[in-house]
Length: 185
Image (cartoon, rainbow, N blue to C red; front, side, top):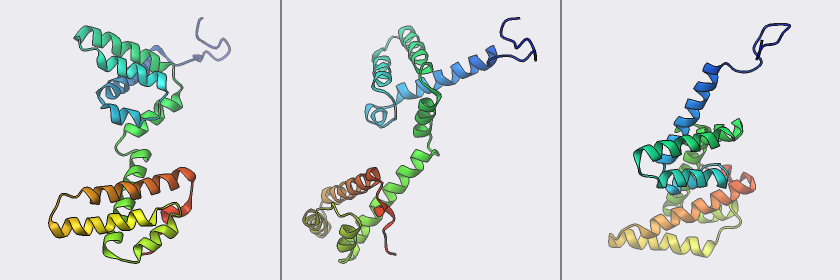
């Protein structure tokens, strides 16, 4: 008997039904990837080759050709290891670890921004927590935000201040620094 252990009678691998379910799950993941905008797609942990296949699939507009290209993309994705596919699923999942971490970093950057705007001593605390911070640039952005608010202008500097702080947090996070938790309440 093919596919069974002669001694125990158990199957060697997954059943056809299980293989089909796995293939359909990968195809559903492929559909999710194709529906993403390019900026979001670039953030996902996938190989450049797989990202090229996704972009190729996005370019196809004819219905039948798109289905065929989507099947090809799913086939290429099934060649990837399970860890890669799981990392992509986690990054796409709104409740996944990656999404929770991203939300936490965003909240931390917003908290620092508000502290900088409310407390004059917060700049010193930020520079202590993130030694790579450009004190002069941050001070200028805080002044610009105050000026924008006083003149009731659009919040360009407010956003730029967030981007600057987020860059510091991301750099510290990439370096594995403990500065992310160095907040005084």
